Length: 379
Image (cartoon, rainbow, N blue to C red; front, side):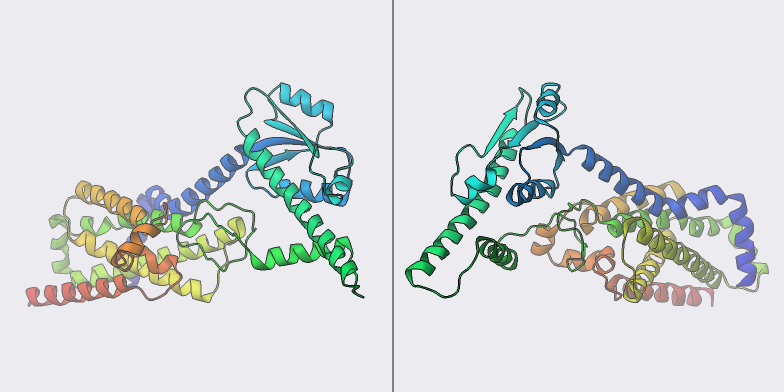
């Protein structure tokens, strides 16, 4: 084993740039894609101006609700600056929360609470206006509920009196607890129990992207199997004590240790950069995934003698896995209809955090057959 490792060190020194590229590709490519999508998402937010003529609790609650909307970028200019920016098309639209907003809401009035301005290219004015109206209607509905409770208390001479603030707060608690509508936008493999920002829109699954790039890099790194099986090199094993099949398996072990070390570095990187949580259960799933990739790549490389054909098939397999795994695009509708697709995909157990992988057992079984078959053929 030590001799084989020393031989590989000599080989890696000659091709260290290619080796380093494929080792770091999954981490770098995943981080670049996620960072780029975050920048694009931030830049694509709709700029809206909110002019506050009063800073009462209800008015500030409305402003905070607008700021929590993930697709809007809220600015707070003065009325003159807001209209000037709207004229320059720096803002999509401007809304003025007029003075006396809270007083009118508490009195049940719904007329002229907010004034909106738009330009000739304000493409988001209508949906934003409807959203603001829905927030205002929530406040007016709570006010109506408070007035109803007060009326019932006076009618039935109740000793327990509820203030307007207490009724509205209770209404908000009930609204939160009931959770009438909650949607998430994420790709398959995202942990539903994971605590994240409730207003964040998750476009990419970090480990899903990494897994796809890892499939490609592992397949291309295992081209050594084809190179070692060239007829000009196999003849040397007649003078070496190590049987050829043992030599190949020991190389698989060396690459497994190397790649798993890189995987652990990737886990640390994603923890620091993307706040991806890592625990012992995940480490087990990561090792199982790595062992599955290496054994599968080894078996695939044994089927080829032409490097270029092997590279072409590797890219094709990576593309198929990326599409069918749900790591890049959602495929819940397909997997719900054809459940067997999920069991056939080597990425599915890893993305679900499961250490048991059916593909790994199949690959080990085929390697055992290959090992014994080669043993018999050499006898």
